[in-house]
Amino acid sequence: MITREKYMEPIREFYDGDLIKVITGIRRCGKSVILKQILEEIRERSDNIIFLDFEDTAVLNAIPDELSLLNYIDIHRKESLCYVFLDEVQRVEGWAGACRTLRIRNCSVFISGSNSRLLSREFTKELSGRYVPFRIRPFVYKELAAYGKELGRNISLIDYIIWGGFPKRVEYSSENGQRIYLNELNETIILNDIINRYRIRKTEVFKRLANFVFLSNGRIISARSVEKYMKGTGLPCTVTTITKYIGYLEEAYAIDTVKKYSAKSKRELEYYLKVYDEDVALNSIRVINNRYDITHNFENVVYNELLYMGYNLQVYHDGAHEIDFVANKGNKQYYIQIAYSVAEEKAYEREFGAFAKLDNSCQKIVITNDDIDFSTSTVRHIRFRDFVQMNEL
Image (tube, rainbow, N blue to C red; front, side):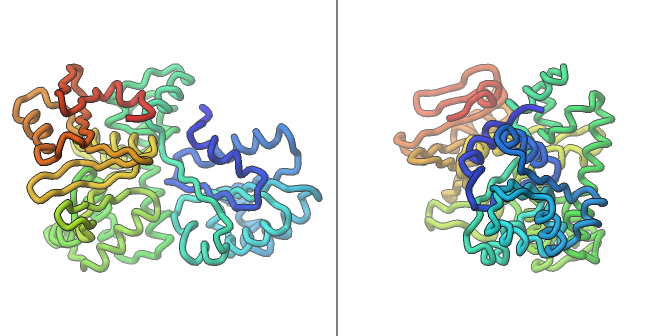
């Protein structure tokens, strides 16, 4: 497995500190691999290490709660600084209290989990800020291509746009094998990480809503629009429940929502959200007859790449025009339009025309899958094949 230096580097300076290292992200995005790579780096200078994987039922049955976890570590550790790795720790009852206690018992604690409740108000209050969070995401294209090369496979851009970056799916050479793996992963996320965890009784309602949301990637939705859709399916659902269910999808890191920013009112529009799947495979496994949603998946993977580069993103709205993203990092700001192609005149006019009301002091970018460079004197066009190799815009 490749070393994901983008994530490893910022964690290293905390190896020996008493802050709890919280590593979160969607299921099977590579958190456990990163934990083990950190462990191997530390093993070069210490043998006082304990690793527990609570995905293993035998481990969870033997160490189900806070007291048994603390007792196990007391028995197996040495006197010096002990490095404790707890994978999928949220399955342990009272895990937050255990982490707090370990921190003051000369332990450097690393924990991982697939639910953002690891960073809930209750947890952060209990730790009094004595933690540092690191969110891991599925592979971007550079990582996907590097891992494919390790396995002797060439991963094309269109493969990435359709099937995304869950690391293990690359290990299956056939499309059928990948589909089976991704469908099983989807069921685990929906059933284990959400329905069972939150004790959702209206399972069919939730599954139908989740399907709608995953297929809406790259689109703006509201609770009202989802309510209308659900009513049309014969599974009516209140706005309150819809908002709660969308929150569950976010807490499991299955989706991101980006608020619209109104240029006129200078504020975020609370009731309108643009949805992005954590990985486009969550869209593609749901389509019928291989009619993949290339255009919206394309926008979704650009979104994921921009996050990987470290940009903060908002949707820009000035009343007449909408721009896909305002991207900020440090003191730099970019206005970005995304389109699969602008080769046709109407598409060109639509995407480049979105910048019409912006003055020329703004940095404007269009990202497409076209091979031709369509840059103008005021708008920079970036070809997707170049974009996925970039570290900065």
